[in-house]
Length: 165
Ligand code: HEM
Image: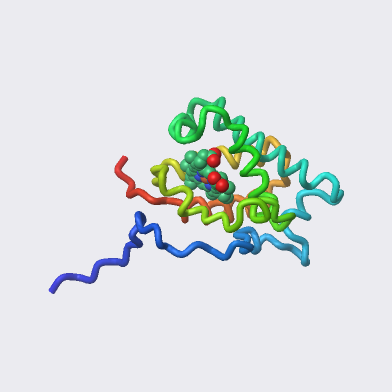
């Protein structure tokens, strides 16, 4: 008799269910009723600019650090739209204004990432860019760590190719 095989999710199955549109993976970061967005700054006027700064630091790292060429090459040459969409998305994902959903509807992130080959190496490059951005933006290390755990979950959900390297 064959030993039972551990269950392996079919990573190329585009029907793997997407979380609800308004479900923020960063929910678990909430501390004493304050969302991750609120925790970015005590001054409400500084929160959206902080998200913008984070997005810019993230794409600058992807763009200028040759170490991340693999995922840089998946993106358009001009990153202006990528920056704008990710800024709008991140605002809502952190628990701030749902700018992306208001404009584009449900993000369907997994489905939207299907055309791009994403295995563990791409996921890890993406997370390295984000870890760098959190440092550059001087996000408090404990808070940054929690954010990275949430980003990992979303990035891992985006994997759609088996690891061959
Ligand atoms: C796991 C590694 C990832 C890779 C390689 C990757 C790559 C890409 C690429 C190539 C695009 C299309 C070009 C563009 O619009 O810039 C894109 C779009 C996008 N990505 Fe990712 N991504 C990853 C993870 C994530 C994660 C974890 C998030 C959210 C936390 C995210 C959010 C988005 C958003 C909001 C868009 C725009 C979707 C739209 O077209 O409306 N991505 N990504």
